[in-house]
Amino acid sequence: GYYQPISAGINHSINHYITRTMQQHETDKTNTSLQILDLGCREGYYTTQLNQHLQRQPVPQRQPNPLPHLMNLYGLDISKSAIQQAAKRSTDIIWLVANSSDIPLPDNSVDIVFSIFSPIVAEECHRILAPGGKLITATAESQHLLSLRELIYDEVKHYKNGKLEEQLAPYFTCQETLQLTLSADVLDLLLMTPHYWRTTAEKRMHLASLSSLATELSVQLQVFTTQPKATP
Image 1: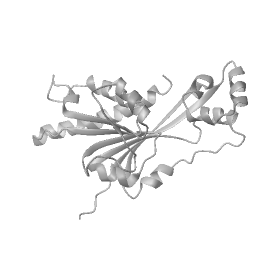
Image 2 (image 1 turned 30 degrees about the vertical axis):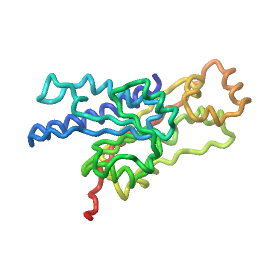
Image 3 (image 1 turned 90 degrees about the vertical axis):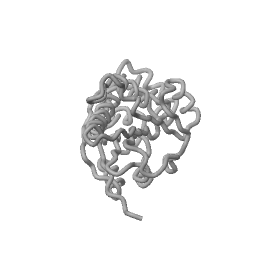
Image 4 (image 1 turned 60 degrees about the vertical axis):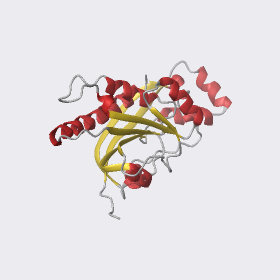
């Protein structure tokens, strides 16, 4: 449950955008279904959390029709084994084995892409997103897991804040930023992170000998909007 606030933040941002979009559809009398993609979904935890969250949300002005009837939710990951695990979580979601640099979806076909600690190819996300579409991200800040990283590594490399904005700048404009700062127990958290696989056996034994140690969870949630696309 340590990362549950990240899931809740992503779900809130997406639901807010969906509500505004559906209200606009009511105004202009259109009935276009929404397309949402979890980019780098791994075993589908965040994707299924979002799906369950949206299942509980009513459609504005169209109750009692549930929102998911007007939505396609995709989860994409390059790992076949991860997608196999994800597919066991939910049959409501369309699971894709693919590379984030070559997403198997048409141009301008997706309304929302969200990425949680996963690589983003800005040009490819811009290609698949419809005009005005949203890219929602969760990235580590400089203090993220700092106490844990100091125990594991002889030399700690600090994450560079603002790096994502620089990467996305040619294609996206940052619309909103939210900071999440929490704490967690190192011994439980280590098994959730890639740092476990980079740790020597000696360092793992040292960590296991500790009765408890808290570390920082410092995560930035951001909402980006697509910049205008060049006309052919």
